[in-house]
Length: 240
Image 1: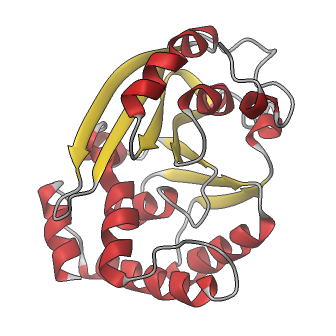
Image 2 (image 1 turned 45 degrees about the horizontal axis):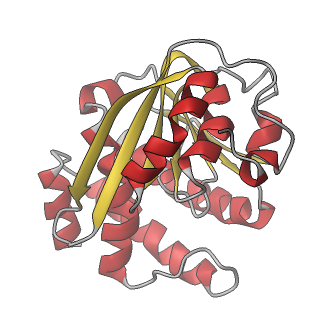
Image 3 (image 1 turned 90 degrees about the vertical axis):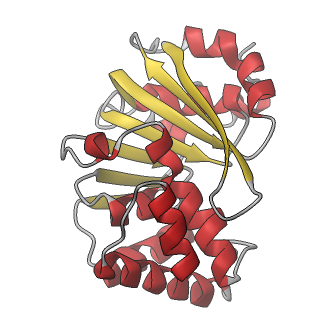
């Protein structure tokens, strides 16, 4: 845990004792539940801390802590899986209003247990596909931030994620590699969907040799109502 705490400090995040305890409980639950369902292939403590927890918190490379702590931001994490990056961000920035969206209900059972054990407030899980919820008036263009980590290529992700974002909001895609290549291929789709590339960051996670690439896309106009297309189509036939 000391290495994780020190790495967080490199991101200018100073963890409280309560937050440190929350990350330990989260890890313990992750390993316990991973024995009965496939949540992650990474289970060694230091690797989970760096490749999951610290990676999730790298959003501070795009948005300042002041912005994340403002108490005004609603975030949706699309394809959240085992809760990354949504839950680590909620632990460190409890003022965020967080929605965790995933298509596999048993993952949400795990996430609800984490939320209960950590006594997190203003965070909900939603079972379903982004293609469907992106058309739902309750969710469409409702959020200030959308995150997605290791779900699909950027062209597909843009169609899945940008419909959730308000005008002037932002979608942040977490990538391990091929980020620049995907960004080049996604340019036209991003424009069609109402987005504009705001920022890109390439970096190595503190204390590791793990390379990351983050892409921030600002919503500059309303997404046409024809998007997202029906379930499965954004992945099978990405916008070109």
